[in-house]
Length: 326
Image 1: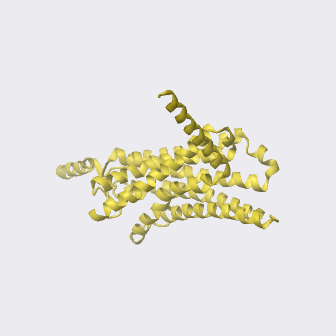
Image 2 (image 1 turned 30 degrees about the vertical axis):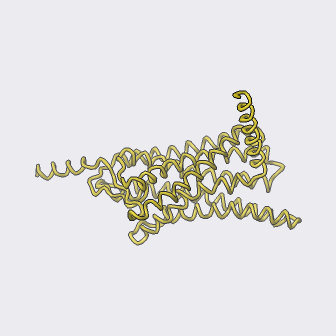
Image 3 (image 1 turned 180 degrees about the vertical axis):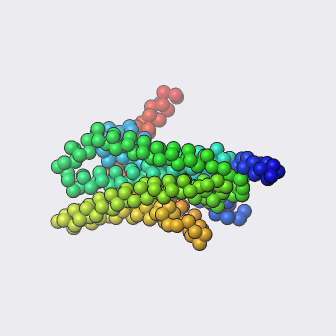
């Protein structure tokens, strides 16, 4: 009896790191995957950091819509940096290990940022709904105080849910195997490795998962339906076509984000869906942060003008510096 207890204790304390199996890639694919995801990461960071700089530095962009866009871009920078650097290091070095504390940190940050992105996308769609469908009331509904409360509330709500979840996950025991069948530390693969009772954590995920995803999704879709209805009333064919082009691109990206998110977190966790869920994790973890700046910001006339001003100032500064350093 004593030997059995000692053996269980040793098993419980043996796990100091996890192994991320990733996509089951071979050595030949690792370099190719490294190059693909490195380009994605560079584009993601460049586009989103540029948006943050423009929103902060240009007074013309300090409006409700661009406050939301600036927050979204800042979120995407943090969000991508939670997953991609570790993934790139794994492709480059072949080292698939991650410490238990590092895994928990990644899971906490990812959970917080993914919840926050759901909230921000719904707030941005509501902002566009008010601007298009209720333009006379826009200044009253979307004033600075309300926007601040919405943004702070979103950050606090996302962080609170993540703190509650990680506090319960960190109390679990992991006694082997230590292989996570995913390319990052997510809840479901972690729970499969625990030798503790995970029923409370699963209940928490069952409650908060749909709450995090479905209400923002419903608000987003409802807002876009109202926007499309308003667009159909535009008499000008050119104006209607331009509005549809912008709205449809937003709706496509949002739909891909939410649909893949719901497939991964709302469908039951069964073995036949494991590889499918891993594939569907790529759009909302990797691709969406890259395309959001292009879809929401970089095509806007105001952003293009602001970017041109920044470039002009930078070129002028370089010319002045070159003259004085002669």
